[in-house]
Length: 207
Image (tube, rainbow, N blue to C red; front, side, top):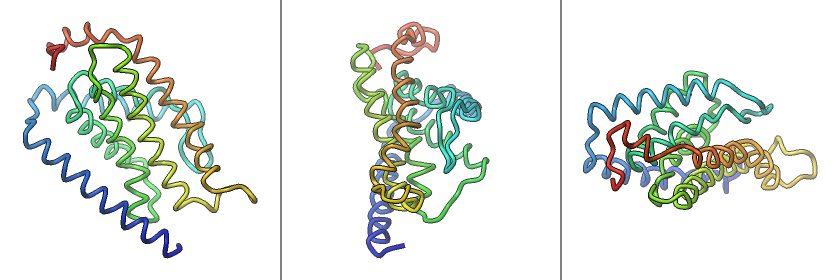
C-alpha cells in the first residue's frame, strides 16, 4: 500500500472518529425508548434477511439485494436520524456475521460500518412532503455509495481491468450495484404511506 493511501487511511479514521463522537453526543440527548430499541432490532434483522436475498452478486463483493436498505431508511424517516443511524449501525454489526474481508481499519469502516450508518440520514429533510423524503433518501444512498467508491479506489484498485482508471472502475462497480439498489429503494419509499405508518406506530408527524 502506498504512503498516500496510508495518509488517506489515517484521515478517514480521524473523520470517522469525529462522526462517531457527534453520533454519541446526539444519542446523549436522544434517549431511546424500549419500544424504539425493539423496533430497531426488528428492522435491523429485516435488513439482514433482505441482504441475504441477492438478485445480482458481484465477484469482489456487493451486488443488488432485495431492498436491504429499506428498513433502515424507513426508520430514519419515521423516527429521525438518531434512530436511523443506530439502526444502520446495528445492521452493519449483524452483517459482520457473514465474515468481513478486512485489509485495513479504514477499509473496514468504509465497507461495513459507515455505508449502513449514513443511510440513517434518509429523513434529514423531513417527511412532510414526498420531495423532501426522496431528496433525503438520495442523499443518504449517495453518501453510502461514496463510501464504497472510496474504499474501492484506495484498497481494491488491483481489480480494475488493465488500462482502466481505478476511480472509473470503482464508480462503475459500486454505482451499478449499491447505487442502483439505493435509487430503486428511494423510489419504492415514495409509494409507502408514511402518515399511515406514523399512526400505526403512534409517531407524531411533526416529530
